[in-house]
Length: 230
Length: 362
Image (cartoon, rainbow over all chains, first blue to last red; front, side, top):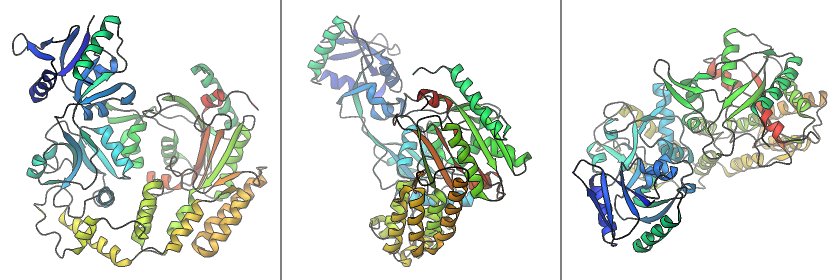
């Protein structure tokens, strides 16, 4: 059998990953036609390329169905309970940088810290009769962050896309989302609160701690890691 | 180790029989509870510790994390004080941080709803648990959240600050952060300074979007200004809270210390007298208060709905295990569930699985 390397199957993340491996003498290419998710690895023996959605790579790593995988730290932390027992980060790849942040309407001039957010949430609940809604798709990370920050009287509402629009559409009062430049937030009249982000994320190469290796695979993995210098 | 579900159930039934003997009525409740009620009570944090699932017709439902809320609801609909209830059944808790802990286990409970003489009711419940658990190697710890709330209510500061502190009684770290800020021990954040320095902070704030209105924002700014004008909370007041939270003694000595603290904080007196009456009631039921432990901060971080007497029984030989039994008074919970109508109550639960796991009887 061979070592399985999971890489995001499309877009900029895939291209940048290919570049990163290419610069280290490992050629990754997609094979077949444009729509077929198949790939090849040149420059090292016994490694198979598995093209996957970035969101599924954490699960596949944790289950040991792939040995190595490239995905964002945010996805690893959100999707894996006790992530550090299941995967080991080998290298930060220097792209795909994004912070998971909490943002509120810019007109909330009285809210800059988590302290403020908590006080605003208490008053909001008293006024409106329900807990202040924060739209996100990163439920576990955001909940833990707000718990640590001592914020109460809020609720998380699920938003799988266009999260920045939820405030204007009156389906949430605040948002917690990934941002790289903040342009989308500003365009939607939101500001990032003045605290450490929930998480600083970037594309990272992870090794599965659970995937089994036979002798050949062990050799192939060692060769690949030496070549990548990780 | 390996306690089977059948053994756990048999132990639960045995414990319940003890509570039935003590005059309790047997009750049960649905495993699927409406999530909304519990989320509104405990906040979003509880999701990390419970199983929430979705039903297309009922919306979000939760596998019962305990029996207390449904039992209170049942009592408030049909019961009259005094009432004693017991139950035995599985509860469900997600264990993200501790995968080695059981996510499903039995609880056997005893709940007493009584309008008169809370000290007697507290003592009745504690004595029943102490007697039931006497054969095991367990250490009993008690506390009283009511003493801390009385201290906060007695602080010489604004109503707004007292309310904010009261809201975070069960979040010790946040409570501490608020005390530090009110007393000036931690600096005012620069963003707050800048906001207060501006004459018309609402100008050039960007378009008003969302449900939180300009009036609400203006109201908070006004209250921040009032708070800044109020000046710091006196150091001696903070020191009193610190001294109070540090009380960790046998009940008899704790009582002496609390009487001393109440000299400087007269608002504490009714709560301390209440503690004294409870000690007397416990002694009258054969509990040795000269050796019973009391910790003023006990139950603050893990028992969020208790607002008076709290207790726990922890295995002496197995500090890695959670308490085998916990309980306390939860008057405020009944008031919230009853929309202002309270049904004073005190109760507790035993975990038969842990009892079997801690092994031999002493």
